[in-house]
Image 1 (cartoon, helix red, strand yellow):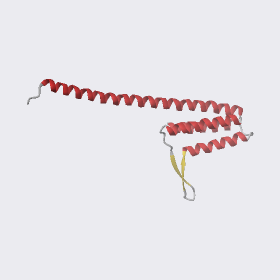
Image 2: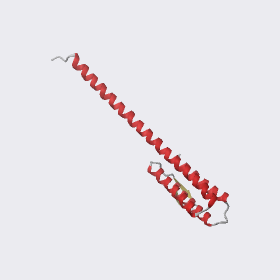
Image 3: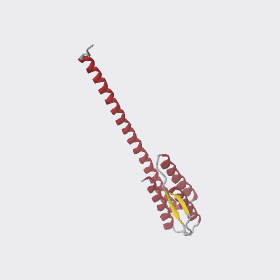
Length: 146
């Protein structure tokens, strides 16, 4: 039995269409993934801007409401950053006695938030010190997602 040229052409065209569909699916998947990444970056940038604005407001007015909102924004940023696949940075530090201590960036940020709370409670601290601490927290957050 001889296979005619028409049958071969149909088989070849069908395999070519399947190959194009597979390539189309990959490019569609790449487009969706890149758009999702852009949206995540835009959300993180928006949160950083909100944190900056709230930090400036906190330094000016020094109210507990502003402090609570600042802390909520920082924690929201951390939650968003970690849920979007950003890894927590871990480091090891050694004391003079030789004991090892594992630190993560989130723990450092929490410590800085506690220090900021104490600074707000201590009304004698200068605004410059608070602005420096707010800038340090913002720097840690930027470090986390870059």
